Length: 369
Image (cartoon, rainbow, N blue to C red; front, side, top):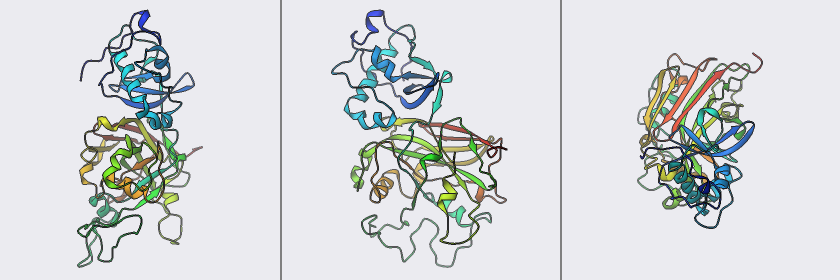
């Protein structure tokens, strides 16, 4: 990776009509930020500086017909392949070769990081998508379960498993169980650095470090061979869970209570466009709470990979630009430990995916406490 020099060109090159910069192949990330109360879409370089995209677009010459700067992240995602990718590359090339630093390039520490997408229309999460996590949840709080003689281990299809017509067609040699998905409310989304607030009266709150696949365009009934084409990029979601239940046994698990309390969906800090992720099926993941390692795994251990999850979800509902699929949690969640470990006020959660970034969130007391 070439050394980034943050400089600005001579006055003639600073205007929209100035010399056209050479597009750069420098990797970048994308996010949403706030400066002096005003939100903006930004381009992040080297995890250290952020370019105000709209301001830069006004200042930097264009190689062809100028495309309108995005209004927000959803707009950027929807029009990325309609000129915005090239425009971002031109702006990055300008920043790499100019002097001194323009006033629309900010230190990351000088701006407030917001959720990268404000807000996904659909947040689809995949449950029990790593075998070891499925095993630990089957024996919640009591260690690995004693499996019934002859029964397949978690992650493996039972003898009665069949295709779900119109949703998930099983191959004859597929020994895995079918995918299982649920919706998480977008109102739960918070940013990197914001606090997960424990709900009033709830003391069994847990968390899972997950890779988020960001959808790039309208996706309905996507075939597996084309699934990658519908992904814009990747982010991180901390899937916070209330394991306390609702006080009765009707209809089994209550996913609304478990997953959708306010602040239960930390997202970000940024989005990495897919062209900068060599293989989302082979990324190291590490989750640390208060410096203690809880989860350490690799996305290669998923039962259903990222692309299969796009297929499954899009055969149930139409996904749109900016929607997020959280692809499941590895083993190591606190609620499955013996004794269980639940989140406490003052804890600090640090979720890292190789090449994607690190999402850090403190844990706070319930409102008014």
